[in-house]
Each structure stands twice: as C-alpha cells, then as structure tokens.
Length: 612
Ligand code: M6R
Image (cartoon, rainbow, N blue to C red):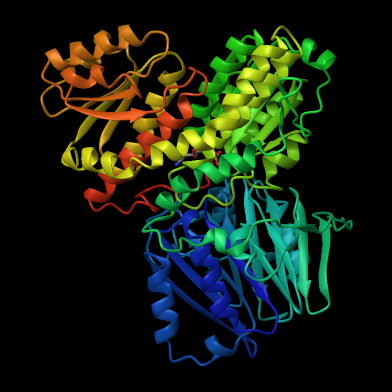
C-alpha cells in the first residue's frame, strides 16, 4: 500500500526521493518522509499530509546536507497501525538515531517483538509495527548491516518490503522483500530502489525484481543479491516498457480523466495481434492451451477484489455463455480462506491491475497448491501475481495512477472476452460465431470513443445529481456487474453512498430506501431482459425516485418516461459492459468533480492493497 524508495548514486538524493514519492503517491498519501545520509549523519524530514507538504518542508530546510546528500530513503504512507501523524510517518529510526528504515507491509508479531525489546530497555516511540523492525535491526547489529537485517527478518512474521541504512556503514543500502514488491532500477552510476516502477522509469528502464525472501545490498560497486541465509541469488535484469510520460497527467485535470480518455488506445493495445479473424479465435501466447487442453478444463474460477472482481463477474457470464464452461467469480479473500474445492481440471483466473493485491496473490497460491491450472490477468508487467502465475495475459493498458480503476476494468473485460472465445473455440463454438465475436471485440475502441464523445452530455446529467447522498445502480445479465462497478466508482470518488443491485433484487428490500432524492441509474440497454429492467425502473419511478436511464442508441424513446438519459452504442450483450461502464465512469467522475472531491486520491484509499 505504501510507496518506498531508496537512492544511491551521485545526484541530489532528496530531490530524487521526493520526486519518486510524488510518482508513487497513489500508493498512499496520508504522510511521508525522507532520510538522507551525509558526512556520517542521518537527516530525517517527515510530515503528515500530501507529498507537496514534504517537498515544501525539504525546500524550506536550512540543512545544506539535504541538498548535497547522494544516498537516502523515502516513504509515502497508507496508515495501518497508528494515526497519520509525524511520529508514525516513515522513515523510522532506532533509539540511537543511527539506523533508519522504510517499510511497506505488516509485521504481524510486532507486539511480541516490542515486548522483547522493552525487556532490553528499548522503547518504541511510535504506534507503528514498522518502528519495531527498525529497532530490531539495530538490536541485531554487530558490524554488518545485511547480517543484522537478515537476522531481524528471520524473527518477523508478516509482510515487508524494506530499505535500511545506517551511519555505521554509510556506503550501503540494504533492501529485502516478503509479500511487498521491491524493484531495483540500475542506472548509470546510480541505483534506485522502489516499491513501484513509477519511481524508477524517469531514471532507467533496466530493473531487477526481488522475489520473496530476497535481500540486496547496494554499494558503489553495484548490487549483490542473496537470500535470508546469505546464499547468493541471481535475478534477471529486465527492461521496463512503460514510458515516463504515461505516468504524468499532462493537460488533464485528473489522472482518472486522462485514463478514461486513454481507454480506446488501451483497449487497442490489449487486443493488438490477439484476434485471429480467419479461425474466429484469440491468440493469447501467455495462455498456452491447445484445443485439447481447453477441452480438459471443466470449470473456471475467477478471483479478484474491487473493480477487478467486477470485471471477473463479466467474465463469468462470458465463459458460461460462450464456452459452455461452468464459471464462478469469488472475492479473493473469501476464496483463500474458505477451503474451496478445486480439481486439476479447474482453471483459476486471478485478475489484478497491480498484480500485488495481497488477497488475490494468496488466492493464486491456494489455487496452485491445490493443483489447479492458474492464470493471471495483470496490468503491471513483472508484478508478483504475473510472475507467480507464470501464465496469463497482460493488459498492456499502460500505468493506471488514478486510485479509481478505469482503463484496467475495460481492458480486463476485453481480455476475458478473448479468453472466453479461445476456450469456446476449443469446445463448441463455431468458427462463424467466433469470427462474429472477434469483429465486435475489434470494434470496442470505436464504441468507447462514441461514449467519450458524450462527455459534455454526461457531465450535464452528473451536475444535476451532485447533491445526492444515496444512489442505486440496477442491471441484469451482463449489466449486473456493470451496475456493481458503476456504484463502486461513484462511492469511492464522490463519497455518495451507492449500491449496485440486480434489477430484480431491489424490491426484496432496498426499495424501502427509495425517495425523491435517491436516484436510480437503470441500465436499460438493448440486451435480453431489457423489458423487465424497464419495469423495475418504473417501479422506482412510482416511488418518486428519479431515474437516469442508460439506453442503447435507437432506443431513446424508452427514456421518455424517466428523468435523464445517457445513450450508449447498441451492441451484443457480451460487448455492452465496456461502453456502458465508460458512461458510468464519466458520470461518477463529473459528480465527484462537481462536489469538489479529491478524485485521484480519495480519502482512506490506496491504489495497491498489499495487506489483507
Ligand atoms: O490492483 P487490483 O486490480 O488487484 O486492485 C483491486 C482493487 O483494490 C481495486 O480494483 C479497487 O477496488 C479500486 N479502487 C477500484 O476503483
């Protein structure tokens, strides 16, 4: 959840650390800090609030060493233990101030370690689990930092991505990971350590990814890697393919707006070279199923969280409808803990934009442990889920910085449609049917462009509802998950209480909440069940609730009896979730903007949820 960065080189460390934290601010933004080492002395600057406040504090500092230090570490926090104040902000030092550490993850046995340290007269000053680890490393230190770090980490239960330094050994940074990502960027005469490629790509494309229980020591001589028992390990140097501009918002007011408008290109990238129009199938090189293998799969289990889970629900419909495969989607945390029945003929599909979501990763491990075929659908190349699944499909959507996931969702759905066609063609789908679906998938960027062209019209609708405090989204079939996703988008960025419901379910309870200030967004697209959903929307209208009707082009007449209308392209049911979701993303965005909300960094949220 938090962002961590370390710099070892010849340039101004503070400048690079603060810029790296700004680029990773979407990972957590309640407090931040840096520590630099200069002339054998550690300097720490921390502050609650956004990175801008940290930058102001560093700029205002009269400490010249902050401008000349060439080694340092930094952190942007998403609080787990303790309030977001300066004391709880990272970097954390030990009691002597001679060791300093940044940490991403959770030390589960921190109370036990804290009590043990107290018996040796070591008192922690913050409420965090992280400080305990900094104190423990200092306690374990004799004359070698990496030995102290590995000794301390062997006493720890939980997850960590850390970077540590000490003034005892000023020419060294030590980093380690277990469950929280660490990437090491190898520049010319410099090394940048980060929890996220975003902090590294402005400086270098060459990177190494630590695996769980790896440690690395960074010195002027380069990077040495080994495991916690000090046996050397080798990790490949790979080229990061994101361009630095892709992680900047340019002329757009928010990353979310930019990312919504990037969707036509993002989907083009996700489907490029993957549609075989001749055979009416998809070519997904990361899913090396022969038609024979495809025929062996008897069930698809889709796991994910949040928006990725909603995308998985669309996939559930597609796998069943197209490939005649029983499919189930499950919240990843529930899947990992409820001891699911899994057979070797099950295909577990883990969906995650970041590829780092703790519960989804744990579900992957559970699926593998029980012998299923496990595949990932990830956006971040080289992310933990992508690497651990070993097979799967990348989205190629480019970096998604806005905390509200947008282009990842539409690309995830596009990828699942291609997976469904591929599996279906190895089973019962005809070539002709496959060709037809491929042609519609190819048209997705154009359909999304049609929705984006209505930005102004959707904004006008949104502004009417900016004062709303409760809202419902209803849909059926392929549009039921879209209703869930529309409600999730609205609630997370506008703080309006919004619920996505199956249209038929509303009258089993929630209808009691309807009144004249509770708008209903009714997905009345031209798909099977439309007439019934229109009936459900009428039931809402009869209870004085205003209805925003989302209708297919050519069906505008339906909206006459409702309050507002959003028109989306008319397309087959399996295709409809993508343009319809884009319309709901715009609606949520403009409502949040009209309310003056912090769209890219909503309160309490973080982009990458690496804790359970
Ligand atoms: O990186 P992931 O796709 O695994 O993230 C899953 C959820 O945390 C994420 O989709 C979250 O729900 C977003 N804030 C939704 O916009």
